[in-house]
Structures are given as C-alpha cells and as structure tokens.
Length: 565
Image (cartoon, rainbow, N blue to C red; front, top):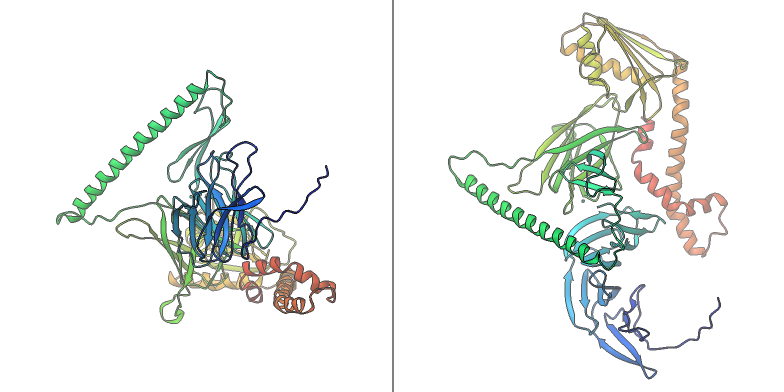
C-alpha cells in the first residue's frame, strides 16, 4: 500500500531528547489528538490544532532538561497522565497541566529511560535500573553494560511484572523479580475442577499454582454478574486476611517490647533461617555460593583466610565494596561487603579458588529486621578444591603415582581424603578398599584415589596435584603423630602431556588479553580517521567484537595468572 504524505509544520520548541513527545488519547471517536512535548529548557507544552493554528493547552515554566516523557494512568483506562524525567526527579501532570506528582528518586545518575505501568515506575540511568511502586523502592539492578531503554511486558497478559532492559551490547536483559528456591513441586487439580495445574512451594513458604484455567474468560450476558461476584468475594477475603495479619503484627510487636524491657527476660534476639548452597560449577571452574533468607537481606560480609577471586554474577543486584586486608598479621585475604537492595531475599556469589591454598570462607548474613542480628556460615576451601567427582577416567594417560604406607586405619586415611577433595562422603564407604575418580574442572587433568587400611595410592597426570597431596597428607599425618612412608613414581611424559592440555587455554587467554589491550587505541584511530576501512581485517574484527571481548575478559579476572601458576 502506498500513501502520499505532505509535510505540515505545527510549531517549534527547544532542543529535544529521544522519546519526549507523545499524543494524548482522543476524547471521542475521530476527534483530533493533543500533542505533549518536553525540551532541554525544561518546558512541558501541550497543544492542539484549532482552525489550522496551534493552540496551547498548557505550558510549564523552564527547569531542568527533560530526558524522557511517558504517558500513564490507571490500568485498563485511557493513559492520559503525563510523566516527565528531569535529572533524578519525576514529575506528573494532568492533561490540563496541573502538577500532581513531584518525586525525587535520589539516584546518583540522571534518568535516561522511563516506563510507566499503572502505579509501577521503571527507571534507568546509564548502568542502574530501579523499580518503584507508589513511589516506594521495590527492586534494583546494576547492569554490566550501558542501558539504552527500559520497558515492561503488559501486566494484563502476564501474571507478574517482567521488565526488559535494552543494552549497549545488543542484548535484551529480561529481569526476574523478589526470585527464590522451589522446595516442592506437584501436578494435579487444586484450584478448579477440570483444570490441571502445577503446584509449587517455595523456601519462604508460598504455595503457588500454575493452572491451565484461562485468566481472561469469555462471559455471556448471564455469567458476567457471577464473575464479578467471585472477584468481589476474593477481594473481601484478601482484605480480611490482611486485617488479621496487621493485627497479629501489632500483637507480636507489643509482646516483643514487653519481653525486651523486662529485667527477668532472656536476650530477645530474633531468629531467622538461612538456606545456603556452596557448589562447584564444572563449566567455568568456579564455586557458586547461594544465600537465601526468609526476610529481606540487608548486607552480607564475605571474609576469607585464603586467596580467592570474586567473579561477576549477572543476577546479583547488590553493591559490593572491598576493604583492605593485612594477610600477614591477621590471615585476612578478602573482606567484601554486599549491600542488598530492598526486598532482596536471595543473593548469589561466584568465587574461584587456587588449588594448593586451603582454608575457610565465611559469610556474615544480616537481614533487615530489628534489633540487628547476624548469622555466620562457614565453607571449607579444600586443597584440591577445583576437582570434581567423576565415574571414569582415561587410563591411557601418562600418570604419576604417590604411595603412602603406615600404621593408619581406613577411617583415618578416608578423613584425609575428605579434607583434601570435595564431593567425598563424610563417612567411610562400606568395604575394606575404596576407589574414587576426580577431574580437574580448570585444567581437565584427572586423579585416581585408591586406599585401604595402611595404604593409599594416588595417581594423576598432573604432577602439581601429586605435589599438593603429598604436602597436605604429610601435615595431616604429622598432626596425629602417624609416621608415613612416602614413595613416588614420576612419569616425565606426563609433564609434556599436561602442558599440552594447558597450552590452548593459555594461548586463548593471552590472545584475549592482547585484543582487549588494543581496543582503546583502535577506537581512537576510528574516531580520528572517521572509518575502519584502512584497518586490516583482524583489527576490524576486534573493534566489531569489542563489547563481547571486554565482557569475557571482565568475567575471568586473573585467569591468565592462574594458568601461569
């Protein structure tokens, strides 16, 4: 279809930013629409056309530069309320120009993008995303790349709020809200006869159904009243439940005050439970630490007495700060504080350890409850922490052998293996002899462990693994005053074999580091010359993949140094 379009100039305002002009909904069918626009002078102007002339409906006084203008209102009604973002402030106007909202967000950066959905306000600065409901902070996300725009899927079609960030690295980041662990899952029919559903329970106690019953029902003339009555009954039930909960909160608050003020009362420290997991990820040879609390988390302090690397986690919206450590005097190699945003109940961290250096990682978890209280969780970093249990190994590889003999029991040698390696059961397995196979998730080398009463045999294609085992097992035996006879069988071919395994990883990381070092210089040349035609294909490729290369390099701190080690 072809259309003939003719230019019609209506009026001119000051310099404008992207997405600062909207058309208000028409008041009646086929009526002309009003235009509302904001400019860099801080002026919001609404006008309509009358007898071929632009007539102002309202015009505000100058102020801060307007970066965004959106329309909003009550859901399922005409969206005719005007919202503007200027600096870190949000202001709202009626279609007649009366200001009804002035909200200071206290963001450290100026607002660049905005989306309105009912009483929900979605904002983003260059790297920070915030969600507000009725001007109260709900969620926060710190993005790894620059945010260009933000939108939310229509809440009428989705059971929950799903914001989407459009980022500079050409990635759409779909955010997941208030997330928590699923503890149980069942299939059946609970809500309504004839509609199957999946019923899940979560860590914090929610029981939720995912039903096949349609949310939007087509009703005939006789059923509309019935549906409205069902909805009214649900609302009344929820109101009664809310009033009951408010009453219980007041009661418990009074009881707590009386208990804490009584001289005979014991310490009234509130208790809370923590659901935590500390697991080794095979894909990137890192440990994932997940902390989940029933109530909102205020902050988490991470302390380690061994050197570890903290890796970036996309899902993590907390703000991290590091404290200086004196490892020589107090055995602190890491002190980091994660400050969580409102309503954060689940925090995920990623760390990478160094094999041969072992100790304890501690997490001090402080929730948003009064009075302030804290719980400590401890996680052991084992000497061969990057090894993972496997069911088979390649017996054709060149292997080095460490043999231990002495007056030790099966339980004692098993406890030494538990101390050195992850994923080994605490209790000794049944039988007189046991065999375990392990694979190094970082280097892909392997370890075979066979031990019984009075003897332990350990084989690995990596001589470093054998060296670490020898040092640690000797120390553990010395602590218990047990004499060990230690013998080695070193296969020199294994050194060349292990270097061949390391070489591609080392080459890739070295090339990645060199490419990242060239990016800034190549960008300067591009700006100076105006294009990249003069560059060789290799350098053009680096510029095209610059964002991806920097992101990958950022995710692997000290990777090259670990391979050198």
